[in-house]
Image 1 (cartoon, one colour):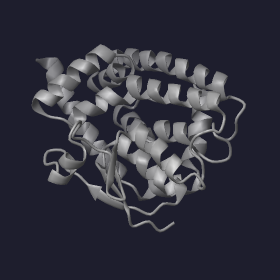
Image 2 (cartoon, rainbow, N blue to C red):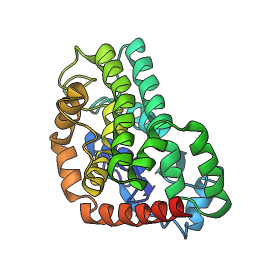
Image 3 (spheres, rainbow, N blue to C red):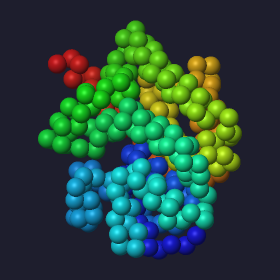
Amino acid sequence: MANSEVKLFGLWASSFCHRVELALKLKGISYEYIEEELNNKSPLLLQLNPIHKKVPVLLHSGRPIAESLIILEYIDETWPELSALMPEDPYERALVRFWADFLDKKFLETSEEILRTEGKEQEKAVAEYRENLEFPEIGRNILKTQGEEQEKEVIKFKEKLEVVEHGLERDFGGQKPFLNGENPGYLELVVGSCLAWVKAQEEMTGAKLISKEETPFLFSWLSEFCEFGVVKEALQNGPDQGRRLEHLKLKRERLLKLTMV
């Protein structure tokens, strides 16, 4: 679907931006992608998102929309005739929103904020990160530990992941292959957008975080997502995994140095 009025301001390393890109691709909406620099944000980005000053920002017909979850719903409501992202049933929509919010706050939001800020903004993000703890803190600990200590952190991560496994299976277990039916939707975009980073962390640390044996529902669901048409194409044509590994390597080196201080 041709649409020259849609622009996405993003950052290659951001899972929040990646989910918006995938949503546009699933809907078949053409768009212009504008890569921002973490240390040199454009005046236009700051103008479009003066409150948070961060990506992603979707610009549609000259009007900016910020925050990835809000952007996903905006895309779905603006182009309702194309592959629906949200379920029709109000209760199911509420469940999807609950899990998206839970996963963002416990798993992604605060840890990624540390990566995309500096100075006082980063200090604030670190403080919020520590308050929010659980998934982000454990993920960070996996990166900064080795040997037996790392094994303990991996066990903690898997214990937390079991909560997600059982909760999603309880709420959506009867829906195949995706939680929204035949096509990936809102929640797949939220979770699936960070998979490349999970795989990079597995490769970097040697720790298997999501497995068929321990989390069969999540494993099967996310495997289906990765093999789905435009998603598979986007993953293949997206940032090279070597770039992610190099990014994680530098992050891990910084964390290991901090633990030695």
